[in-house]
Image (cartoon, rainbow over all chains, first blue to last red; front, side, top):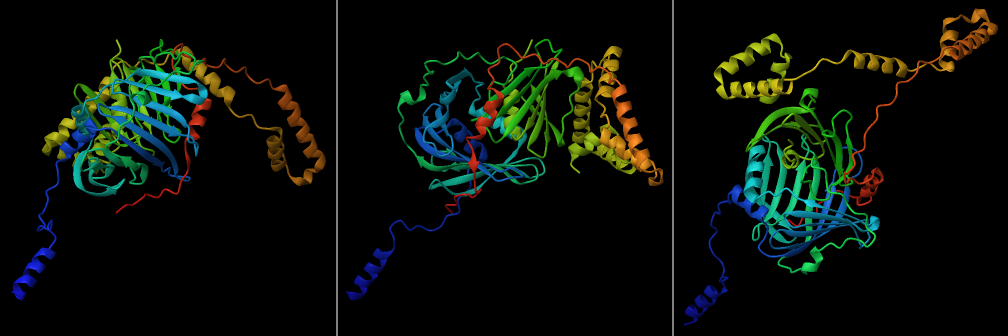
Length: 323
Length: 152
């Protein structure tokens, strides 16, 4: 009797949830990327920290408050220094983007180039080889890590995706020399979380200057936080050629649109040609990031800057076809 | 060297004779590499398709501008050169005379007229933030230690 009691107690002491270790196979990269690009099924609120690492000088960082509703509705508030008031507010709904600068009473808005998750995956697949491994914990959530490698095996981007929702929680971008260039990471996350619909309606300031629509020569997409800071027509271009620059305050990308006859030279090394549907891009690696040449009709657009090739391809691909 | 770099160097004629022979042997054996060479060659050819020779008047204007922008030596530089060229046995009087000569020569030479600056036409409608805004965007960023909050 005593032996039976001791045996019973010993069996009960084994945790009920204990189960033998089973080797888990890793999920496919394509499925993870599609889920991340589709976005989570529920809304969320997060605090994001973005760090930029320059070859010379101290790293820089900014804090962004993120609010999201299902269906691709996202509000991003960029804070100036330690101020609790947003310096910039960006709202995207998947079709339109609106950017409000309260201090300057300016509101920009425009239609966005829409990319489906399948198109996004195709863009990444055209540029990189994808591999999956176990990630650590980010914002207290278990993650899968997806590495995006350029031909030759060097990692260009690493993504940490929430195992449960697929949400992108952290992203690191590396320069061609392998040094870390940028880190974007959720430091706090409430998932699921509801945000009022009114939060995603940007009201124009009362005395706001009317904003002109973007000329059709410019890309219909730029990475979050990047503003068009300069644009000029080049002389002799009949209004069809421009020099433009985008920046988020820490990183920068320029574009130059010229006639094909001017033969702009793409700087950098490891040139390669990448095809996406009917579009063809020539890509190079530069010390700061990347370069890209895109021809449409009798015009060539040259991109150069701190962005990796998948962002450059998306910008170039969002240029409207010109007659 | 990566294939893409070798392809570019081959088309640009930058491979050494030995390297070129080895690369051409590879092209014969590797149809994919050969196809990529054809694509790159075709892309370059299409970019060069309608090259026009530089107009003669534009060439002349560029030469005039380059000559006008050549740095004129300062009077101090000329004085230094003339002092270095003349021996000290000439005495201070010669040095002062050289300096005076420089000043006279400089004031007598009329610089060629600079060409009119090339106008940059501002587009009518672009919604671009002013250049000062670019520096304001930098205020969104603060110095950072670069650390990552490793939660393990």
